[in-house]
Length: 530
Image 1: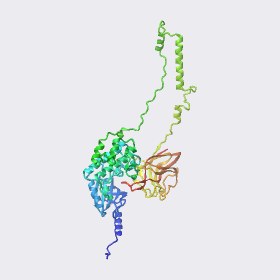
Image 2: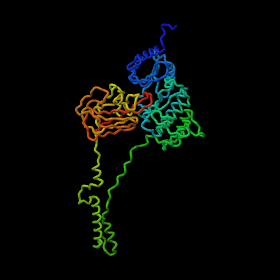
Image 3: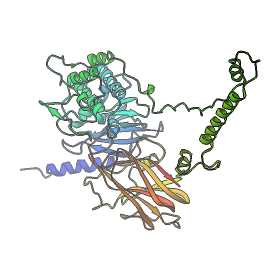
Image 4: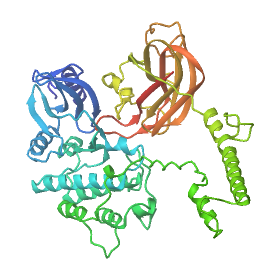
């Protein structure tokens, strides 16, 4: 008979989860210094609460950090701790560095470097494929890093576009060496599988397609033939043959007579041996200004010409010209002068004003009306989540950051209005001003964004609610936007202090290092013009 002290397994699991939730929450501190700021994602599987990834803040060194944690009693806890300690021994700076590993108070946690000026390659590829030189350089950086890890007998095991970060200067950082596989509970990969992963990322960066059979990482699946994806050059003709073949070798998709590359060291040396690709810094989007054409110069008769003509008579003194010849010369000069006056001065009675259909008049009448960019003095989030969606990145929506502000990730979509009327940001101009245009960038295609303005007399914002803010009027709706700049021009200028950009439809995105899978998008480069 069971002892009275025994409890059902379900009660034990619920108790473990309750204790875990008491220790792991926003504001909780680990080791008295690492404050948990924002949960990024959760791993499923196993007994009890699974591993979690957080953004934390090191109060001792005053910097952001990554924090991966798990209950000490979880089946993956020991593997996660060992993976982190192993990853810390790989000296390559391309890997996000492990800063601390600890097991205390029933938690195993790993503190890692946080790269604040970087975004996942997935986000960059949502805007389209990269240039051939940049995509190839990223592949080379990944191959070098994998070769270094393999030399230390370490494998990544889960390398994909979500684990590759690009800084604002296009430097490469790699997330999750050894650790990602341990947290997910997957089998550790072989070195050849890491090479395949580099090849797949290179393919995606060159083509904007995923070489697998199904779409992944926000990218459509590449077209296939005979069980293999099209080569990169079949999708994008600008890819050199040598690059095209090397990608195929790394993917094990090349023809049978071409050797497969299954070593990161071999892939590194093969990329280094490629013909020199034109570096991005050598290119320019500036179109050379054409050399201005000189105004026509019309000849006039010179005295020497008159003397030469006069000498042709043979017996007359130099300098004397027959009257008939002189009359002809004077007539020619008069005609030339008249033609010049006609062309330079026009044929409208000598007026200096160009005719209405002249190039000068067309240029003057079609001069663009200049707009002035208005300063944004502040911003606040407007949604039913009390304005807390990614609040720490709020200024990145309008301070020039390429990453921007990211919405909450929603489980249901793409239309979110059935449960949340919208989510977005209200921008404050400081005082009421005339607004005629708003431009902004949406990260991933498939979103619907609305632009609203407040009444001219509104000087403060109401409390956040699950509805459009009172006193605001919708100016425009832009559907299926994303992957570039959105330009909203008003038919007439509107006087307002507040401008809101509001999402009502969001595209689906796969899980990444910073977000779970679901419906979300980003907003960046917001500019408001008078």
